[in-house]
Amino acid sequence: MIRFIILSFFSSMLFLATAAAAGPEKIETRCCTIESAEGDRTARFLAGQADALVERVSAQLGIEPGGRMRVVIASDRRGFLAVQPENSRVPEWAAGIAWPGQNLIVLLKNAGGDILQTFEHEVCHILLAQAFGPGHSVPRWLEEGLAVMIAGQWSLQRMSTMSMAVLTGRVLPMDALARGFPADAARAEIAYCQSFYFISFLKNRFGEQDFRAFLGAYSRCRDFEQALWKAYYLRWDEIEGMWLDFLKVRFGWLPLLSSTGTLWFCASLLFVWGYIKKKRAAREKLRQWDLEETGTNENTTLQ
Image 1 (cartoon, helix red, strand yellow):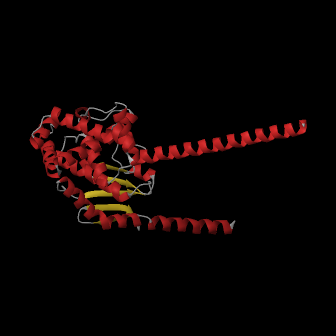
Image 2 (cartoon, one colour):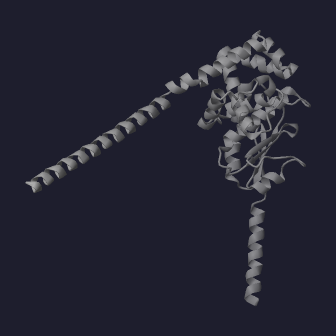
Image 3 (cartoon, helix red, strand yellow):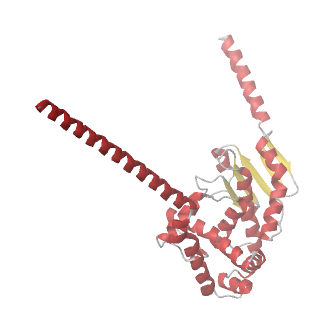
C-alpha cells in the first residue's frame, strides 16, 4: 500500500513537471507572433521562415501587410478547435484557417501537408481581406484561386477535375462564382479548380502587371465587371469568350488525345493487344500441331 502511494506521488509529480514544460510559448518575428507549446520545433521552424513568406505573398499580391499577425500552432485537433473564435465553423478537413478580422491564423501540426504552404495560403487570405477592407468579403474565387496558386497547392487530381468539367459541360459561370461557391461538394471542387485556372488565364493572357491592376481595382470598387474594364479595357462578355476558348484549348478532347500520357497509354494498349494476339496465335499453332500429330498417329494405327 505504501509503495503504491509513493509510486502515485512520483507519477503525479512527473506529470505536473511534463505539463509545465509543455506550457505556452511565444516567438516574436518582425511580422508575426507565433504561439505554441514550449519547445515546439515546428513553431521555431516556422518562425525562421515566416517573415520571408509574408514578404513573398505581399510582393506577389502587391498588398502591404496591415499589422502584426498572430499565428497559433495547435498540436492536435482538439487544441486546433479550442483556439478558434467562439461560434465559428471549421471544416473537418482543415489544416489551417485565417480570421482576418482578428489578424489570426490557426495551424494544425502533422496534418499531412506542408505547414509552410498552409501558412502562405492563410497569409494570402489575411492580406486580401485587408485590401478589400472591413465589412467587405473577398470574392471566394479570387481568394481561393490566389491562395492555392501562391502556396503551390496544385495537384494532378485537380487538373483531372477541371478536364472532366470541360469535357462534360459542367463549367460554372465565372460571374456567378464572384458571388459565392456552390454548396454541393462536387461542384464546389470544380469551383476551386476554375478559380485557379481563371487567375492563371488572366495572368498569362494579359500579364502580371495588368492582373495587379485588376486586383487593385477590384479591391477598391468591389465590382467584378467594372474592375475588368478598368484593368483590361474589355467587357466581361469579351473576356468570357477568351476564357471559354482557353478552356477548350487547354482541356478539350484534342489536348487530351494528344497528351504524352494518352499517347503512352495508347502505346501500352497496343503492346498488350499485340502480346495477347501473339499468344493466341502461338496457342492456335500448338493446337494445330496437336491435331496433326493426333491424325498422324491414328493413320499409323489404322495401317
